[in-house]
Length: 421
Image (cartoon, rainbow, N blue to C red; front, side, top):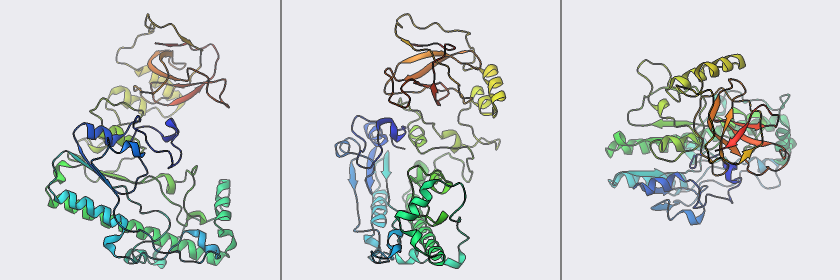
């Protein structure tokens, strides 16, 4: 979201390895462009060395966010993450206090432009909310949860149940516990809805709603009782983990419409910086925020190439699409590499994606040219990762990224020649 990169690009795999000053950073770009940057909330983003150039104010308010564990440590339910309700003063709750700090900033008639960044904790395990929201959802009103023990599920489903000691509960205890966890999780979500509403009302009252874009999103979901599981898992791909909210209200945007095509959190970077010089592998979502007057869903790129390419849904259609539209309005049948090109990358056979073309920036690797194995046209601005061979198990392969923006593992038959340029 803040870099336009996937986390693995620079090895950011844990919260002990945060963004360093030399890496892309949305807040820093905006601050350098003259934005006042106010940050109230947790820090899962920046290393200490990155704060000075990225935020004018960065604080975490409040004195706590959760209650106490609901069960003693020797009870198998202890590791379910179900806690009692938060009983402290609401004004001292961490998420409430951070949003209140943001509201106070908006009421201070801040000089524009500004960015208000509010990274909150909720909804997140442990499962606990201020009392009103902790008990807001009646267990009888909950629909059935996704059942545990379904066939053909990943091995980590059973692993989670074992290391959380959930497999020690009888069926009735387990079902009751999972439903209570789901109810509390929904209550935590309701608490965040309340805080978002207060923030939007403040924007209206301060006269800032007409000039301010609001983006509301989450980094991941939670099992919260579904499949008989709690928390999350790094490689989990169920919708309840990956299909997180992304709600945007922006001046000139179309209210009330839903975008059906997949988007990703790192698209927020490109959306925010669409007019800047920064380039990334992410998409800008501006077309989705401005639905056409015709009522047809907005596409990611209004060009004929993009529209035609996105209609290709089968290998046959993709082949015809690429041949018909190519990658440019006037396409050459061949492109001679620049005269100064001297380094030759090993030949590669690449199955190019039917996705429409776009230029991709990378922190390393030469740019080059390649002939598409489908339409035989020469593709420009390809990115070839790996001037040296990557590590096993791909020690004999080159990682090639085509103009379409999808990474492919390229083997080495002589059907396609790629030259650095």
